[in-house]
Amino acid sequence: MRIALITTPARTRKVNYVLPSGVIALAAHLERAGHEVIVVDNALERMPLQTLASKAAALAPDLIGISGIITAYAHIIDLSREMRKALPSTPLVLGGQVGINNAGNCFTHMPIDFLVHGYGEIALEKIVRHLSGQIRKEQIPGISFRNGNDVITNPGREYYRHIDDRPIPAYHLVDMDHYTNALHGAKSGEFVFNGNRLPLKEPRILPVFGTLGCTDRCAFCVHEQEFVGIKFVSNQVLIDHLKFLNKTYGINIFNMGEEMFISSLKRAQEFNALMKEHLPGCYWMSTTRADSVTPGMIAELKTGNCIGLLWGYESGSQAMLNLMNKRMTVETNNRAYRLARDAGYYSTTTLMIGNAGETNLTVKETIASIHETGMDRGAVFLAAAYPGGRTWDWAVERGIIADTHQYLLSVSDKDAADFTVNLTPYPDFVLKAWQMLVNYALEREARVKNPQHPIIPNFKRGRKNYIRMVLRDIGLKHLLPWMIDAYFVLYGLRSRLYETQRDRRFAVRADAKGALLPDHFIKGAIQRYLSEEELDQLWKSEAPRVHSLSP
Image (cartoon, rainbow, N blue to C red; front, side):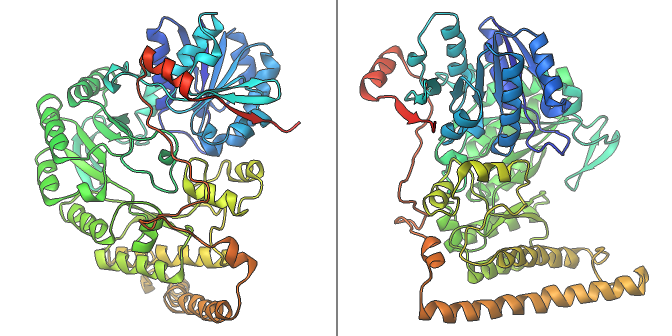
């Protein structure tokens, strides 16, 4: 069969430098099964939708696959409708994070025929076999499809027997010159990347998944309900993959993911040794957890060419880390940051403000942690709710998100730092003030390290600039904190007198470990290989779910 796979931009207003790893993984699997695959990379090309639909129609595909994340929701609605106009009888298959816990909206507002849940290689190939008349769609685990006015979701999820059985992604189907030049035209010679001087003739960087999934189920993350558990590519298979990328495309900086590439000292030692043996002129960075950043781990990584460690810090409040189900302590987070920083590693943090249960005290605890560690750079996000985690389920149950379709339209094309929903009982201005104060704390630490910081008041930059900077400092250091503290004094007095409906709506309930607990908790299962016997047992033990669409 001829299959067209279409990528979608996470944000339509920005140039895409993120390799469509999921799509080219699907393409490689389908090519190995003997199918012709064409990737229409509209995340990069950004054709008008009518032009894109005409191009797809000219390919005369037997199936069209569309993939995207949740911020592409509105775009995919429009795209799927244009595709249906251009190719009225060609099956449309949707996959990716946009479909997690969102099948009703997808089938209501998109003219799709199938929705693939989780990792899609096995399921998509089986859909192709179904269209060839080889199997019934009711025999394909982990897909949803239309049946009149109902959506049928088959139980289960299938994956390879071992992750090493995956073929190398079909890099040849996308513009690798663009995706490997994400350093935006960096020049050859002594190149500074993340504070490290790298003697690279032509720096080229690429993300490579050495793992899939995650060890944890954070309340805000899709790994709670889909893409559950972690799968490790063996180090030898991985090093062969990296050697191929280095030889074929000249990649010399590898960004190793997905979420938890470095999870043990043993794995780090093995991978580091292979990199030093086979790719001594290449560099790499890794995702990890703070509790994996130990003196022994740092000492091992310093013997090789690891140039960065990345992990989610999220909050300096233990209460908030517990509510997020992070399985982490503030002390461990802070120790990891200091270890990485003192070893000369680029360590940027992600901080989330305004999650369910956030208070003025928990924000002050985060600011205190910033000053305690000397944290001087990080991205400060306002918490949002997306399908796939318990934060979303809680917000929908409580009516904080009353209309999921309209909400997903509103968050489409938005950045993570944009304000999308208020998950606290406090006014919106409080959340925005918290974000400003946390950013200011990071800025103050950056000033300590850099006396020439551009936001430090300095007469040499002009009197008006100096006055503006002084007034800004007064506002952020004194006036804004005083205003927020005054608000919470009044809020506390009122809450002692009576409880409002808003207070009750935003009340949080926690499990025994302190994690946010919605009334109807959804826990996803690990996607794995299913033998014929296990498939037979699956059909006998679990019935398909039926969701009726609104007429």
